[in-house]
Image (tube, rainbow, N blue to C red):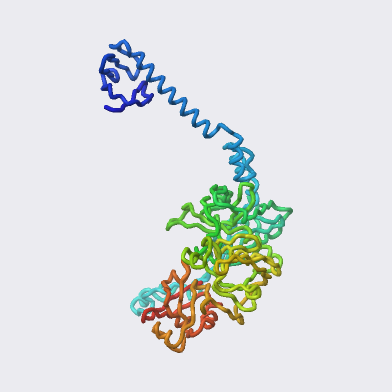
Length: 552
């Protein structure tokens, strides 16, 4: 045996190389036999510690074993203490650097900060119950037209009531009071199509509510409580631009049922700027591992100061029903812009730059001579827009907006849309590998794209609804795609995680029809999709036609 353990009272004391010793179990414990000039035999009783000695150096060797173990243990303990606790001030400084709310590096202080954050936000968190009436068609049996069955069972058995019937649907969500007068923020999908909305406060009081405004694009809705008596508790709003990956956050809401109201879960910011998830039309989402479950939608995501930094919106379940550690929230800066705009103007007013953009990859970064693949690549500049007047061009890569670094397209879209109308903003961009800047004056986003022509990168345009970039072809070029030589629209590229990718549209696909309307130009395609909630597309790919149905 080259290595073994010396055991006493069942505890491992030390491990030593024992080339000169043989060990085997005796009647009362382990029998140790030494070989050489200092031969001895000692048997140790593991249970009661009694010994039988047959060598005069037995006690001496045992003492040496114990001394070696204690010396090793003391050295390891001293090293561990030095590494982690030798300088408490430094430990406190490192912990406090993550968030000023922490005044020391102890677990107790962190726990106290979390408790204070929850206590600060919870009184403003509400449960939202909705009811909607859905008119359904009467049931019709597949045997209704068979005379044999109708003779024996009668018409009522097959057709039921001849009149449409109402079915009541109930829903549950969460929200947060942001103004003591009774203004509540929640998700658009929580109250969409609701005929009745009841809001239950943390103390059990209930108020009927009406929708002051709702925005599907950001999945934010604003409720106004009726007959409010006094001033209600409200939650302070933070700044979602200050968030960093790894920061602690709390998710508060009403998961699954009203009996679970005021549930608080804790996690961290897992990622920022998530997009392409097909959650309504929302981009630039906050990802967190704080548990978010059905019923949490519309509740606040809170930082360690008790400030609302997001509105919880969705989860990825992996096919199950509950939380799987991946939840998403709408940045509070987006929600704040929406609710202020609704209360002030009765609708959401968004800033407008006048460009189509796409994300960068490593290949594009190299060809464009950029230091890193972050930013938004301009693929289209619409004429007469702020971007056109600022002389931005297709191929420019926008990396800063009003001092805020731009990592991707979703971040730029949010930054532009939440900018105050008429404000002059400095835009930093790369062109031909050179860093430049310009100033744009933000205007209100047009309600319709009609009458706006565009200049594009290589004659291409982005169709945001589908998530594709297309171009017009005609003549011989159209014939290469087996299309009508008088003209058609061809898909040049498909955005990852887009609706087009979901239904199997590939580059090189010709879009021939939308809802039976022939498509010859990009204007035809834009007009056909502009106000459509759904569409049937006739596509041609590699000589074969097929229809696909899409819902926006």
